[in-house]
Image 1 (cartoon, helix red, strand yellow):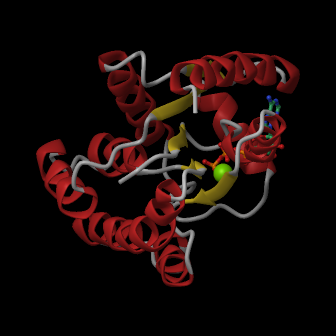
Image 2 (cartoon, rainbow, N blue to C red):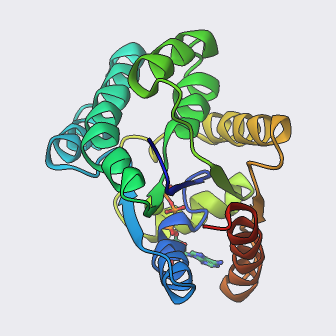
Length: 211
Ligand SMILES: Nc1ncnc2c1ncn2[C@@H]1O[C@H](COP(=O)(O)OP(=O)(O)OP(=O)(O)O)[C@@H](O)[C@H]1O
Ligand SMILES: [Mg+2]
């Protein structure tokens, strides 16, 4: 039985998800919530080890299905040993990327059929889905410029602009299907404006969940 609130942060490279995670957690704590911050791929010892394989620029030739299966292997470990126990305790879980990223990257980006991803989603998650997916939408050029300024590119960041255009389209497609569950942040704006948008979104979520 889940009593907490499960929020994931999504969007392309350099959109500002990781930058804003501590601020989101602080804001929720200031509102009296108990918050667990985590990320994917990773979040537990085993899943972080899988993350190393997934992101390593030294393993450029990975088969797309292998990548997909590793993502869900890491997710299975993370969900069942960390996320679900926290939700059962009634906590708010903030996860930097989750299954929407798999649909966007391995589905829209790599071209794996979305129906195959859905099979693994059901296997690993059963009926568990994020309560809210906060989508950081940013144009590909701005996002890539920000990500490049950060330093050495991981295996995904080495992809080309067309790959990231497909990912952006995929995210927006998913958000458009369920707009109430997918608040969209205009992430190319200045940090202060992004935070204003986030605060509005979080106020709405708190009002709707009323926990
Ligand atoms: N609103 C902003 N304006 C300008 N730069 C920003 C803004 N938000 C974040 N940045 C900078 O952009 C870079 C990328 O941000 P961040 O690492 O948070 O992105 P991300 O969405 O987590 O990306 P990834 O998906 O690659 O992990 C960082 O160097 C960060 O300091
Ligand atoms: Mg990040």
